[in-house]
Length: 507
Image (cartoon, rainbow, N blue to C red):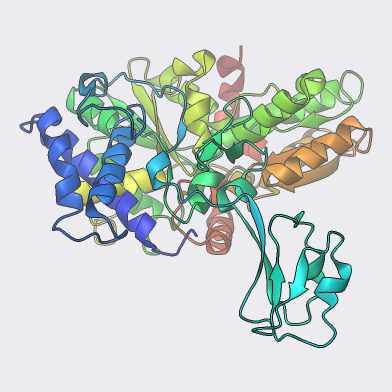
């Protein structure tokens, strides 16, 4: 639903904005303020989004806690919203699992799968739906002339829906579960959605596909602002998918100026890390495939790489060990600014999971999504469309590095480096977008379908531009990122000035 300003997006934006305002107004007691905010966000005596104003405020309260980085509670827990609020009021607070949470009392308890006859049924003479049902679960209702399904007998095979000429039979499935490519969502004892965290890779697709806004992730908005206020030199590392996310008129120069106005020491484009990643993966591929590894999967998407390693542990070594663009950019920043802190700002919920790893914590201090960043801009009344442009823009990255944000871009960048350095080396590529496709690609690779191939996996359909923290229509993002990438001074990743730093950044 990216690009559609639904009520869910509206309430999420309000919460991010209010958490940011709470961080900026240091004169406000945080524990008192968070108790007041549900009444500010949902005023009056009548619900705006649901039919129960008390339920709305309870849901907003849990969303506020998650936006502060605090644990989600059940309706059975008796405690104020400010419970353990002091844990959030520290600028060094990291994300703690679970990152993606189901607010149970916001969940609609959707059926996992249900076949339904709609009003479109014409009660036709042919009645093929009844003929194809293997369990005799569908019959013509002589009273109203429409087909009727006995849900006790129905096995949800969908044959009736396939043969209906009027498309009057539909198959409803729980949206969050359909969006989950690793089948991590099931139903609990109360019929609510439940996440199996042993399977979950925190891609956030359930979050953006739940039409009831019952799934939310944690945020570090409060901690980032407090770190800047404490005098820390905080550097922003912005993913290349940023183009267009803050408005069609927001250029890289305007974004840089706006970030500095907020107090960031400087801003770096993560495309420079993408260039380093592509170069490292290219060298690893040439050295290891097929002599040591039957194939190699790209490393930049943490949700894809974690899924591949979890699901196919015997082939975990086939996923590239190259550092991700986020980590390489953070290392480059800290190499030049040893006492600085780095906040990655991007489209991805799974990057929050990646930053929780002990091996990355020393590099990446905070992770925010574009959506969370928009809340910060709003809290400080920063108008990105009218702000005076910083002429230095963002950074000197390559076309290929910037195109990491779009499906197919990572593989293209790696192949272009190989062709540049090893012109006689042929590279075959397979790519998948969406974890379900990625899982099938990996299954095929393990079965021997892709010998010597480079596999590109993207957890989000469309690439990083479709991440859970984006706000722009996906197709539009793909177009504007491609246009922005073409403005780069270099085409291939290994042509940029930062490549000479790669050996210093990789152990």
